[in-house]
Image 1 (tube, rainbow, N blue to C red):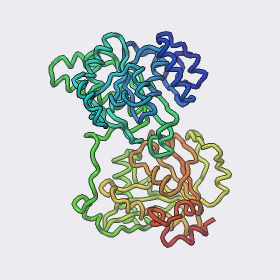
Image 2 (image 1 turned 90 degrees about the vertical axis):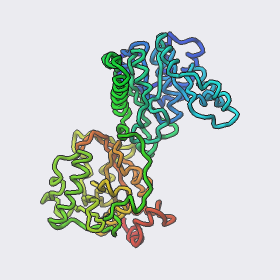
Image 3 (image 1 turned 135 degrees about the horizontal axis):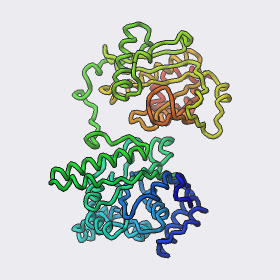
Length: 482
């Protein structure tokens, strides 16, 4: 294996060829078995960085679920020549049938914080609760052995945003001087499913080793300086992990419970009836521009001038339609429709179509309308009725223009992405991805399309929920579009 190779898929043939010179016979067999059982599900990017990481090192991984908890450590051990790598694990995993046997074979560092799920195991936990896993990790690093941990501290089921990191990873590097090697774990199927999958392909992205010798020196000035160093190290690792995992950083202030809807929480103006109308007058353009400026310019920073978004090219004529949603007299959201859009994307956008998708053939299957620029001001986002009203108005508009298909683009990593809503509630199908577009966003774009009649037939079987709300009064026209 070329140590400087930047990407490698650990298929069965590669797994069998790995030499693993530092592994004992039992560990060597276990690592090969796990990699063979994964059937090539693991791809590693940045192997050259892994080769440059000194020993000992602290491996900090983002975390989704149990699937990568087994495969990620096995992969890192294999690519480090079979040398020992002790991971922090929840103590209950060491007691599970079969899985516990596997976990114990990697000589983990158990964390005894959580109470036992079964009362008869609580005595075991209490007997071990005084053990300090951080001190055990410090001793492990001092002996020259690598340590691995998931600094999010829990399985993170958010497919878009990293969870806040705990300070243990910073305390370890300050106590030992070992560099931190960030490893972003991505499950590519999350973009298709709208959630992390239980099993599937895994991408491990290795970051550059992060030494913090300067902060170790600064931390010796006293407790306040030490806490400051811990916060700075944690923030730095979090930023790198988010980038490697293709996720957004954790929300400021840590996770917060979303408040329930109540009259005290909803802005006063938003309790009024929600109306949607096309943007035709200068006054309406000004209101729409205010929404775009708040969301796309100031919050997202995807555009520099909101007025350019509303400029109608003479060549487009009536093909471009902006819809403005109001709650009472307050503008709260907008949506843009483009009738008969160009399906072919510009050269250099990095378009990758899904298997079996042909744009020429797709374009001949009906008349398309592009649905985009769907945005709602932050104070009204907990009111799904606004999105439903905009989508309902868009649906009426495209049916009036005898469109049979909708096309839309969503961002992979945006926390407000309607990807899950479009896929599950509206029946959109993923047809491709591309890297660059009109908006100044670094996220990958996901291209979706839907056949209106087909979606109505599939989603409207029970005439309940979102499908019923959007299609009420339009059933005959939805069936008729073709």
